[in-house]
Amino acid sequence: MLLLTRRSSRHKQLKLILWLITASIVAFVGWKSWQLGVPRYKAWKQQRALAQAKEFIAARDPQNAQVALEVALKTIPGDVDALRVAADMLEQVGAAQAVRLRRDISRLRPDSAEDAALLVYTAMSFRDFNTARDALAAMTPEVAGRTPALRAALAFALATDNRPIADAAFDRLKAQLPDDVELRFAHATLRLKHPGDTQRAAARAEVERLAAEHPQLALKAYRALASTALQQRDYATARRALESAGRHPEAVLNDQLQLANLDLLIDKQPFPEVFARLTPRVGKTAAEIGQFVQWLLVQRRVSEAASWLATLPADADIQPVVAAARADLSAARSEWDELLRQLERGAWGPLPEETIRLVSAARAIDGQGRPVLRAETWGLALQSTKGQLGALRTLHRLAVLFGWQPESETTLWSIARAHPNQTWSHQALFDLYHAQRNTANMRDVMNTLRQADPSVARYQHDWAVLALLLDPSATWNAPKRTLEELHQADPANPNYLASYAFALALAGKKKESLEMLARLPEPELSYPPRLPYLAYIYGAAGNAPALTKVAAAATSGNYLPEEFGLIRRAQEIVTARPPPPPKEKSAKTAPAAGGSPSGKP
Image: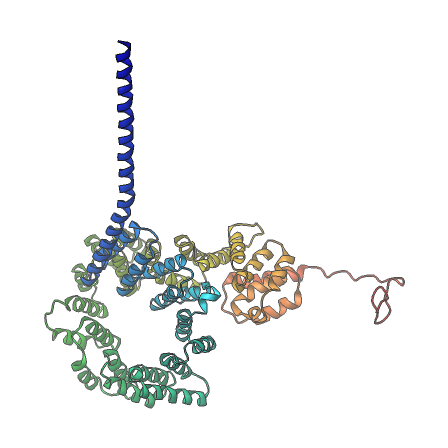
């Protein structure tokens, strides 16, 4: 009986061991399958979302396209290939989020000159030249010296009309690409704006020669020659170039409109004649229809625009742009009730019914002369959009049309906070507050930007400087720490160096502040926006001659009240400081004429 019990016990132990081994194998296989399967599933889900986004873009459904792109990016965070595809798609539909994605890609691939260059190009396509400048400054010397980065630097210099930088970029590119025709052409078009007559004539001859030898450059050449001639008021040359551009097989409607502007404004031709010549040349694409209507509205030809729209066929592909154009006509005529009815039908994009009702209510309240209640009603209209970018942009457009500056401002804030990628809204607010000399609100705009994207050093820097202007205390606070960190991360950056020196001066560290300032190259010491800060540094250190020189140079600057206050405070510090007492000389210690105190030569 004892033997049987032992055998039974051993049998149970063996079964338990076999069961544990089997369970372990099953668990391992399951874990391994999950480990291999999840990434595959995520990759499949990401590719499916990207494909859906592409379909939505083709169907002109940007909202669903953006949702699909967000799914793709969240499925595998940090996937550079997905980020590139998403950035391409967003740029294609004109969505400013493409700039942030390009910036993320550059951070993930800091050694990629191609991605760094794409960030510059994308930022410039959205007129975000600050971001483009930041992208160029953030490149390492190695990346900045590669061909794609140099091309981007040249494009930025051309866009900002910076001839010295463009010449430098061209010289480096010429060494790398001596036979690049496009490069020679770009440099020649830049020199068309040279102040010297001889240089301009040589550049014009070079552009014409390259266009004759390389037909693919001809249309670009005509446009460049026309643009430069118009800026220089050389209307005869401009007309010849525009006529040549109009005859080119690849000419577009804008080439015809440029020539029409010359006909109307310079040659004073009758509008009916110019209009009759133009209408047969306007294609029936949505883009050309919208462009032509906008041109007519700029010419204040509302009735002609309405009559021409009435001749268009009932083509489904052009109906959205025609509806938008008709709403534009109502706005140009100040027919607000009709405009709101058209917006309710989606003329400018989706807009909630409640939003339309609240806008209409705000219009009625405005007629009663009750601005406070109007602003409250407008705030409800903003809330009713639930943060939808298209609806918010429509509200901003309406506020501008109605001439409601406070409502325009609050709408811009709604866009800036809900959609930090829409940097145009931040720039509009910043420009508004700068014109008003409202430093506190300028600081708040930069604070919104830096919180939305803490990785952008410029946002951190500008916020810190504005914060110190408003609170110039000696406490070593967050703005001063931010400037210290920026300087430590990029010691050669003159902006960070000068601003850190300013922070040190505010903190009473005069010696350290002057030591920092001594590292600035001479040209940086005469940079106009920097002068009030230099004045304070010199004044705090008691350097009256340097302060006087800087203050004299800053008299005509376009500065904020607080920046002018820095100069006044510096002058008060120097004026209030008593002069140092004269040193007493004794017969024993006074040196002989021309000698040193020790009597040594």
